[in-house]
Structures are given as structure tokens and as C-alpha cells.
Length: 373
Image (cartoon, rainbow, N blue to C red):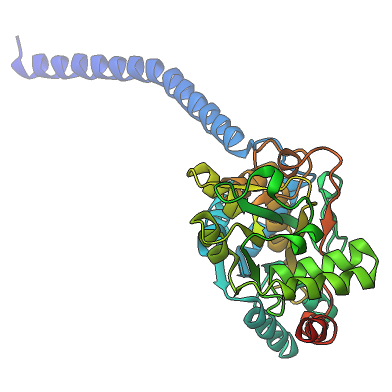
């Protein structure tokens, strides 16, 4: 047999087998590839759907507002709140709303007010939210705050249509249980002036808690003669004057004083958890100091500012405040530090309404009475 013909025949057979094999492989693999591609597409679509799915809204139109805020990408806060408080709140905000950068500046109210007014006069788009107690009302009077009414107003204990109230500072009449029995403690704020116990007072002229209390009591009593007599009687107690309620609380808990006026609820409740011999008078109406998240009129990120204010009032935000021993601003919040859990039902609530110019109010209304006593 011709060897050349045999080689050609073998080559032809090999080629036929090769083509047949290729054809078989192609026919078998194509459907599998198609199935894999289809499966991959389905998984991708499912992942996108899962990624797009969001938790239930904490408040009306939350996610629509978040989309606007995310496009702004940043939040700037000026605050008088403690560093631990503001950083905790901002971390919670970022966890809920990823993709938003946060920045804050912390100062006391006078410095904060001065800075905001100066920046506003320069037209500076510098800050989004002013988080404070007395500063926002004064800044509002200066025209630097953009009015904003929260969509969650119906759940608040107290509501200001100009600025969201996100937390409340509660002033209480506190005493040391080793130095005073419950029946020996004053039963009301005005009853304090008749005590024989050793008392510590906050400075009424510093624009702090006792200042706000005096302003609130004047509005609550609606009797200037009673109010003037109360201020004079406080002065005549000849009590040591302090410029820090936290320091007063520490001295009260240590037994240096039997009474302190006023004490902030977060200090006392934290102390009670640690076993301090302190209690508060539940028949003395609480003085409520609103804490605002006000929106700057020239805010560079206005939607993010609104989102932050609304989140602070939401269940998540209020839980964050409660974890810091700061009183929630919503009604019936399930926490031991909530107002309803601290005082009997029906207890009058005395709200502080900050004057437009606290310094002027102190100089004209309180200081002359105090210094003449």
C-alpha cells in the first residue's frame, strides 16, 4: 500500500474526528454558558434589588430627603453640646446615612453666637446646624436662622415652629438623702427660701440654668411681686454661688450641701445609678430647657441640615440621646429618663422661653433685683 496515501487517509480521519469533537463540545457548552450568564444576571439583579431596599422610614419622606442630602455630601454643625454627645450623635447619623461627611465645632454660647453673626454678615456659607439651647433663639432674632418646622411636630413634648426641639434639659430640685429626709425637703421651688439646710446656688447672672429658671418662673407665676420676692429671698440665703451645675452636683452628692438649685436631671440620674445618696423633689415642677437643632440661613447643605434635625427627633436619634442620659423631646419615650417617668402624671411643666437678648434681660431685669437684696 502506498504509504503516502495511508498518511493522507489518517490525516483526513483525524481532521474529521477533530471537527466532530469540536462540534460536540460547542453544542454541549453553549447552553451551559447561556445558563451561567442568565444565572449571573439574575444574581446581579437580586443584589441590586437587595441593595436598593431600605429599612422602613423613621419619618415622612426620609429616603427622598436622604437622596438630596447625599448629593450635598456633607454636614457642618456648631454646638455647645459635650464632645462625647455630639460625636456619638454624628456617628449614629452617619451609620444611618452613609456617604455624608460630618464636621463639627464646639464652643460656649457667647463664642458660638459671635461667630455665627460675624459669618452671616460676611455672607459666609459656613455651617448647616446650630445645636444649642439659648443660642438659636437669639440668632433667630438676628435673622441668621432659617425657619424650619419639623415633620414630626405632633410627637414632641414641646414644639417651636421656628426650630426643631430635639432634646430637653430638665432642671430639678435635688437634695442629699443623708442630710435631708424626704419630709424635710422643700416641696416647691418657692419653698426653698424657707429652708434651714445648707444650700448651693447656680450664678443667676451668668446666663445659665438659674437664669433660665428665673425667666421661666416669672412667665409661669405671672406675678412680678412674687418673682421679685423670690429672687431677693434666694440672695438672702447667703448661699455659695457656683458657675457649674456639674460641680454643684458633685458637692451635693459628696454631702457638702443638702440642697442645690438647680441640678440637671442627667447629672442626678447618672449619680443615682452609681449609688450616690441623692433624690429629687417630685412635687417641684420641672423646668424644661429646650435644646434646638436650628438651620443656618446660609447653610451650604440645607437638605442635610434638615435630615440631621429630623433624625435627631426620630426613634433612633432619641435613643441616642437617652443613651447619653439626655432627655428625649418626644412624648412617652420608653426610657427611665423620660419626663413622664420622672414626675407624677399631671405635674405642671414649666418651659423656658428664651429672650431675644439674654444679656440685656439679665442686666435690666435680674441684676438690679439681685444686687439690691
